[in-house]
Length: 337
Image (cartoon, rainbow, N blue to C red):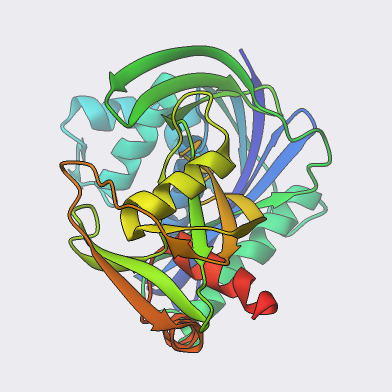
């Protein structure tokens, strides 16, 4: 079980008033600083939010030491008062309990992890407590100065200098369709912790910026159900298993526009959404066009649109085209025009 050390603090200007919280999490060589705030809160609420937001970042059960200068929070948990409040329906014996929803949330997080609470002296010589105080005060000041209008939270990494590699532990295929499949992989993160990644596996594709002798670009207009609208795009299609991307680009150009490329060059290859999709798209530039034959799929309905390249470029710059491969392809082709 991983051992994590957490320092937390809260601050409030006016009490009640604009407030902020902060926490520092340390596990081995990894350190994270988090902070956030609320525009109308109390000091005690911010003292509770610090450990809550810190514990919520832990992806697995951990041995946790939480250092805080708040007697309100530390005593409630280390002296067992919270158990009595829970047994009494989140109420004190002598009256209502303040901040019951936050205390309950923190209690439930502590039940999952093995948590030890340690009281530290505030505004003394503890480096991490002082840093938390600084971050909390800064977060509160944003609301006091009117720089933010909503309650916020932020996470900031500090000095991770190791290898940025994630090792796949196991993978489960959740869906297999005609175009792609969806996998869920358990991975080991660079700091040794584990997480999950949802990945769309796709064979990849090819697209082509085709320009005729009059500097017109061939685009296709089709309805995209995922976007819920008609879109203008450069010709493109999915790679068959083992297919050369160049052959795919040539095929898609002729199938969709009825034109063949006399000369063709590779512009670039890209991952459009590498956060969750493995599709790699290869984009080409074609000139010397000559008539061929249109061979569209039975389910494919589209219109061929021929525009002056300069007009298409202006449409990109004016935000009138919103297909990623088309935008990237036109921008890359500009240097050849």
